[in-house]
Structure formats: structure tokens, C-alpha cells
Length: 282
Image (tube, rainbow, N blue to C red; front, side, top):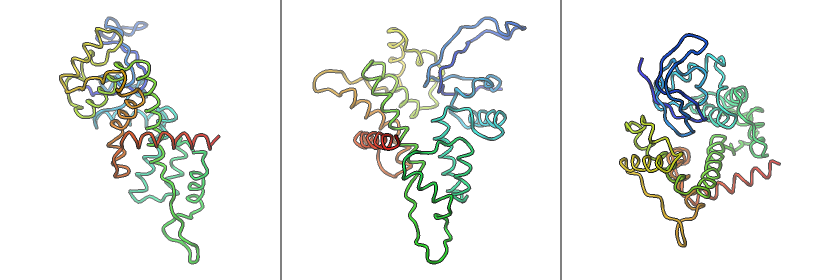
């Protein structure tokens, strides 16, 4: 059975090489490796139980293998992701159900039962109440004014993800500009060239030492990695780099969702919007 590539979403301790052994050891030989979020690993289907919640599939076969395990563990309910990841995925799936013709009320009930986080702001809660009360149903009784669907849960989930990624990247660029740039270039190149043989190599995932960083940078350069903009007066600040790389990371998803381009200025406005919503919900 051939292996499939997966992206690590939570820190994963693994053993490269070696072979099965009788209990109580179960395994002998090999080298202990720690994969960080964003790293790529190739695994056989039999390797997935016990670690599948830490992985994101990079091809259809891998996605099918993960979904089968999740279904077996949860009886069809998504439970293997953390709260934020699960909520964003569930709302996206609920949106797909509506697009495919399922009623908004049924899709919303499905989302709630599958761990979608309910927002605290008044606009979102009003939208949910309207759906459950049937005010947004396509067929309406005579005399009741048609109510506008004023909230998009999928868009809200994407906006929250953009704001969270920006905050994480801002901290990275403030602490380690060169290392943060390598991480973001690795993201970009994986998206643009997912089939590149480089992603099977351990060197591109190791940034722990100066030598490892140089090796990673050289490997990424072969795929067209850009050089990190130097720091200094009149150069891009950590905030500007975080805005720029966040816009690049979510540009396609935002375009598909809204039909508009995601620029650094738009990212900045979304971050402010999410912060305002958070303050109102307290």
C-alpha cells in the first residue's frame, strides 16, 4: 500500500526507519523525529490511527483515509480537530449543504450538533434565531416583509482565521524575522508546487539550527523562494511583513469567497473588525 503526504497541524513525535518488534517494545531501531505544524510527512494508511487528528491531507486519497478514521471514531461527527479548527470546518460544510439545496434550518442544526461554535455578537445570534424561526425560509406567508440574510458564518470563520494567522505571524516576525520568512515562503511554495519532491525531504522541515536553516533556505531557493527583506530604517516592518504574508496565504480563499483581492490593507481592516467583534462580545 503506497504512502500519502500529510501536513502536520499539531506537533508530532515520530520514528523514521526501524521495524516492528514484539511487545512490550513494539518497535526497534529508527530515529526519533519531531514534526512541527506546517511540516510535511509521508505515511502509510496503517500509520494513521492515533495521530490522524494531528494531520491534514494533501491529496484526495489521504483525505479519504482521514475522513474514514474520523467517521469510525465519532460515528460521523467531526471530533478530531481542536475547537477553532472544528468550528471553521463545520460552518464551511454547513454552507456547502445550503448551496447544494439543503434548508438553512437543517444545515444550522447539523452544524450545532457537530460542534460549531456559536458566536456571541448580536448580529450573528439574530441571524441564527431568524433561521430557526423560519424567517429566512424561501416560501413566506403573505404580509410578512422579506427579511435580508444579513450574516455569513463562513465569511466570519475565514475572517477570524485571517486575524489569528496575522497575530501569529506578527509575533514570529518580531521575534525571528529570517525564520518567519522561511516559514511563510515554505507555505507559499507548498501551495504553488504541492507535488515537488522537496516536500518529502526532512531538510526543508528543520529550522532548529543555523546550519539547518541554511540548508532549508538553499532547498527552497531551488523552487523560487524569495529572499527575506532586510530589516532597518525605510524597510518593511514586522507588521508590514505579517500583513503581506497573511494576504498571500489567504488570497485565493478570500477571492473564492468574496470575488475580491485580499491586500495587506484589507487584512489590517479585518484584524480590526475581528477585534471590535471580540470586544463587543465581552
